Length: 305
Ligand SMILES: Nc1nc2c(c(=O)[nH]1)N[C@@H](CN(C=O)c1ccc(C(=O)N[C@@H](CCC(=O)O)C(=O)O)cc1)CN2
Image (tube, rainbow, N blue to C red):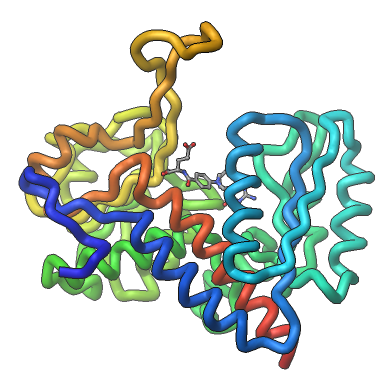
């Protein structure tokens, strides 16, 4: 069994996103060291959302660990859409920058799609620009920059399928959630691997029955522990993309109530049924950061051609 897929003490194997992240980052750092010019990543944060601050810090740390030039732009919550677009335009023409990422969500009053469409497609390391969305949808994955969370989830699916001795080709894959950032690109990636893909959502009739059809179940709804053990086909590979903060027990030293992170899947129930599962935390989340570094390296290599 690989270092990434581990026993859990229960029926399901645990897929270790942190171990997978370490492998990806080591490969990216080794390849980046061979380039004439350092890959450059610019991360733009607007406002002071505490979770976004944590994610942006992790991105900067990972970029530095990979030997990249790492630049962070912190803008006040009062920033206008025009000011943000002007910053993106200046990064588009900066030869030291190969990857641009605008952290989401953006404050009210800024139209995220207008901003994301301004990023030069070849520097769009989030893979959210319509050009990259179109390349992925038409199967031109060798030219597309693919969104980091589904690309990371796909790597974990490949590792787990190998450990379980399963084929992705021909498997029934059900994705619960149809967001542009996760659900839709995840469907394209699984289709490209010849899975039979269903995208389920809030209007899907009898969601538990649809989920139970899945050999590969991807949960990306943003509803804490919505997917219960009895929604899971015995032996299924379960990928939990949800990151939900819910009330925990007791209080922090600063007097604030404690919180804890849970996924979209009820982990303890799922461990009794699934063949393999990604935990939250420590599953898909770390892969989002790893694939961002991989996309930045790719953008830098393409710019050097
Ligand atoms: N421009 C983008 N904005 C956002 C993205 C994105 O891909 N591009 N995704 C999410 C947030 N995100 C990265 O930005 C992200 C979320 C979670 C993690 C992660 O490693 N989570 C840890 C737990 C961390 C914690 O304690 O909160 C885990 O799951 O183990 C990394 C990145 C929305 N915005």
